[in-house]
Image (cartoon, rainbow, N blue to C red; front, side):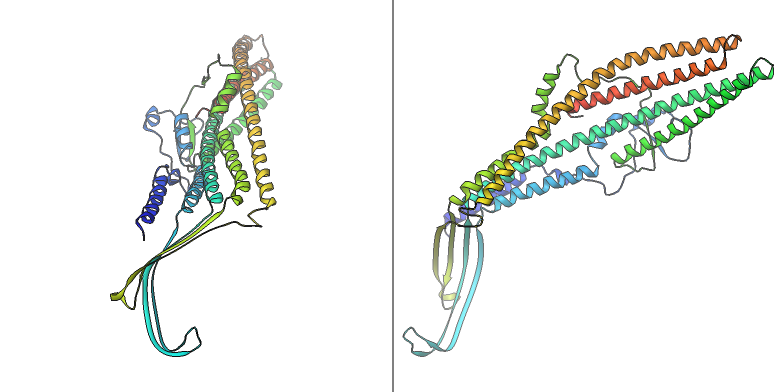
Length: 467
């Protein structure tokens, strides 16, 4: 084999190996085939907050938003699946590069003949002959129009797969954050239900005492007991909601669903992730440059554009076929003499996959146009997400102010009605109504804060930030 050929082959191999090493292999990230046991951070365990509600034999562990976001970006099966899609796209890049490497075939040939043989004139001769031919054959079948465009398209699809992984990772973290807020809301509503239950029990005792001393009305006692039954029913429903919220969050985080998670945050307050001074137009402009979905759609568009170009120019560019053989030839290994053979040809394919193949060009054009439409639709969807999330943030912030005032009014109303009842000037029904209004006001306030925080996170991610 000539020195020039050896250098060419070595250069191609080094190029591909270096290309493989330059990419981080995200698919090598560990993932869990089965749910894992949750080990809370030490700072949460040291806090020593008790699990809300009544205790049982189920294991209960605290969790906070930071831990939720950390776990959401590591173990879920959805991310493991997308990482393997990145792996598949990466393999396509390697395959496209390997098409540039010629096939090398080491050979050792041995031939022997004994007996009659016929020469070119037709005469039969008695002969005894043999030869050996060790050597190397190099074969190259290279279609530049296909190989180059295929490599470019594969590279773009690899970029698209990485952007898709980033999208799924962000969406998974957002999904986990929203699930944590649901857990936090269920936990707060359980505390409200516990307090409402205690108020109802106190009211039942007071009406029963009043009836015993002839100062009450039996109907008031029954009405208070009915309210108590309603509060007990609400309490069991909230406990159910809390357990379901825990299961959903554990499932998202790939944790053992048999454990019960509870929010380490004991006070629910609004969070502020984005400046109020940024306009919605600035949010949209930022999203256009940051959102990984758009990078994915744009990379797919470029890949389809490359394949569209290949459908026209690929068949026009001739294919190259080259064969080179080098080795020795002789009667045996002691009498070898060097031999070399060369064969180079150019050609075109006419028909399927080649010249005048209109179907291939039409299909490539359809894919390119579809990717243009998908990119435009993705931009439209992102703008809608931002407008909706921005509207919700503003609306929920206003609702927090209204709900907070509602708590103040309802709490004062309940205090005044309880005082009137103790003085014998009020009715138990009035206390029941005030109590119901106070409980609902607290639920509305908690709900408005949770919804506001969800809207904040949704807007934060829709702009293109990482949770």
